[in-house]
Image 1 (cartoon, one colour):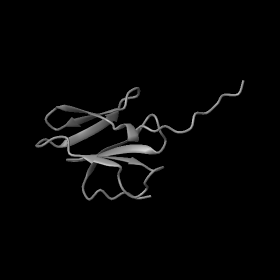
Image 2 (cartoon, one colour):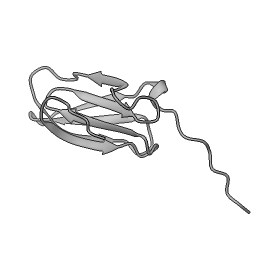
Image 3 (cartoon, rainbow, N blue to C red):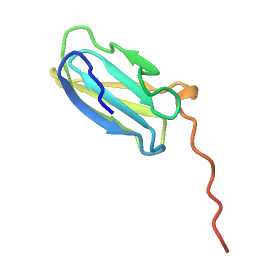
Length: 95
């Protein structure tokens, strides 16, 4: 698959809670995809800052939160919507 963002992608990361959810950051927006729901467009996108350019992103490993770093040294915290937190089926362990 190929995703054309139309500008420079500064960072991308898979969600630690799902093998189909990932986020990518361009210079001014963040996009969240879930390939299990929609393969050809993002489920969410947001322009979190006005002037500085985004430089990186990171998923929180325990909570539904994304941290975004910018060129001014700032960090923006974004909480994901509950509809982006759907997890796959629970795998039962054999005893």
